[in-house]
Structure formats: C-alpha cells, structure tokens
Length: 95
Image 1: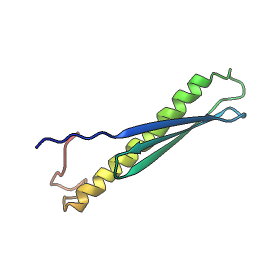
Image 2: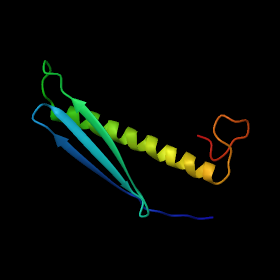
Image 3: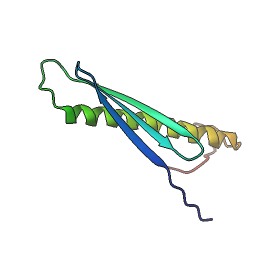
C-alpha cells in the first residue's frame, strides 16, 4: 500500500524585552492542526544572545509538539482496538 502526504510546519519566534523567547510551532496535516509551545529565559547575568534563546525555545516547542503527536498516534492505535502500551501483546509499529 502506497501513501504520500505533505504536512506543513510553521515556527513562530517572539522575544520580549525581558529576555524571554517564546516559540509556537504549528503542524498542519490538512485535516488537523497541533501547536507546540516552548520558552527560554536569558539569565540577567549572561550575555543576551538571541540565537541561543531562539534555539532553546524552538527546540522545546518541537519537543512539546512531538509528545502531542505521539500521544495522538497512541490514542488512534487504541481507537483501532489495539492493546494499551505496557500489556503483553504489542500494537502498532515498533520504534
């Protein structure tokens, strides 16, 4: 069975005057959208390097999105009548 799909990802970064960087990453599957959030705070004693805040906030937002996507897949697997994780009978695809 062949399957092709295109999902779009948008990453938005915002930096406040207080050195806080916020990131929102939006995954659009065409039928659903998930949004991950992440923040990074610059220590007042450190040199403010915006790129580092962007990297940390974006990474945390993508990490949040990844957890949401894995949870959605787990819920879909269970919805198909598969056994829950931790039971003796495996379901879905192995990592």
